[in-house]
Length: 387
Image 1 (cartoon, helix red, strand yellow):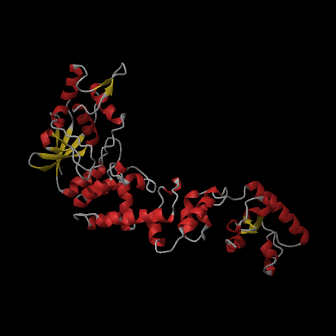
Image 2 (tube, helix red, strand yellow; image 1 turned 45 degrees about the vertical axis):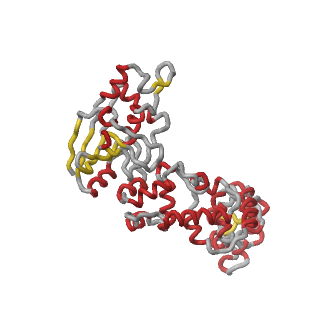
Image 3 (cartoon, rainbow, N blue to C red; image 1 turned 90 degrees about the horizontal axis):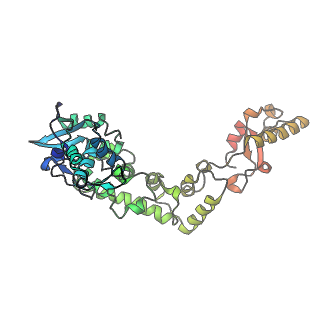
């Protein structure tokens, strides 16, 4: 890959003709239309928080360097930003009057209201830019190695770069667009931020059964995202129909996998709703996030709920009572060993070789208190399971 370092371009040059489109998924342009600031594979603008974007402008005003930028040559006198999109977008928004800073008196100032010398300092500040030229593979491998203004690309942002094409463009317009009216509904079930590609990553993970790279490669030049969109909506629709009440713990569950495993089974939403509510209120359930899978799976795997365990003090007390009684009677301090094989009937186990067990299983109404605790040798406790 060929590179050329240029130091002659000013902020005014790069931001000339800057167009900031509020609708995500659309390109941003500079250098009189010759520079694509936001290629389809790049992340959305994430500096618009009143802190990072303002910090870029304040750095320029103070004469601080804002770092190297990399432009990729894509045609005759045409370029796209490889690294520097967030900084250039912040600069462009300020130059176009879309961004203000706070002066020493606490008054908001735009490019049009700051002192002329400060205005010229911004416009005439020269940037350090590497102009790169190479194959698609070389350029996108470069993207994997550069650091975008101190905020590394997420895996989905990298995949968007590697498999850029019509599919990524359409997918971002649907799943990376915070103006999409469906985002509010999706947010109950999906973790992360729309503009950092988290919703797109989730949709792709679900439809591809976890093999996102292969799926994106196969569909790279598709002119529609019907399968991706349809599958995602099917999962969300199924979850919403099975679980009438929305809980914060639903957010971020692997609903795609649960859909594949359980969507063909019949459920009574009213019963499910009542059962989930009961488990949510159960103080012995310490992992509420596992309730949904637990109910879908027929309430077989209590490990999903991380049921409250007996504390060490209770274990020691029960162990002592059982051991004292066992020695007095000449039998094992494990109740199951005492009535089992001859070789173990009188064995006294160490505390470290025993586990606390619910006499009456939690799933059958047993509580986690000393009256329902017994110490079993580890082999018998493992064999007992949920009985």
